[in-house]
Image (tube, rainbow, N blue to C red; front, side, top):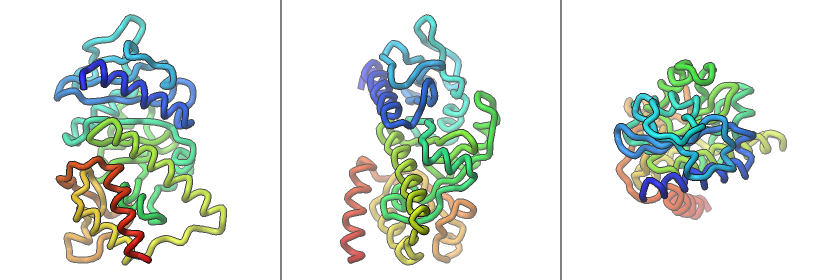
Length: 266
């Protein structure tokens, strides 16, 4: 895509997260990597539901402005985005939002670790909580940093959620998956508590993910237990992931995998 087309896509995704109630007012921010020293990002103080391409700023790898229309400046959270790009060369887009259910778990201090549905196990593995940091400071990037080698999404304590992937669409899909997972977990708890998948079922899903070579970081790919020849864990406290080499669109591939898994479990 041209740079202008990417700006339009950022605006489209911004409208999606606003329309879905993942942000309120001027909350949230989005960025896309153009090359190693050029990044597009949403501006500060602007509703993500009402942006047009001229709103989008361009910054360098230090977050310094390369291009911005008069009256616009980059998101105050650009430091967080730049840390992701620095430590995850495979990432080309970052989405930060405040989805209601996922943020509620972040506020309650509860990570998303229970294996309750195949799609969440395959796509996310689990979603840890990065310790609280003051917005716009280095505290949040520092808190997020230790989770970057192992996960594609994290909750931000008392703040929101962060998702990142090899494309803007996939990063947005990660955010959608985090929120859907959180909502299902919350509602199942209201109905008496979820019935998690068994360890054996989780391991089958992990193995299928490995076979399909899904990209990103995931507990199925690198875990201290697995490296020691033991069953992989499904917990943020002891597992991590490494990237695969697949090139198929994540959402479509996960749907295909899930269909096959469900058929095999009948």
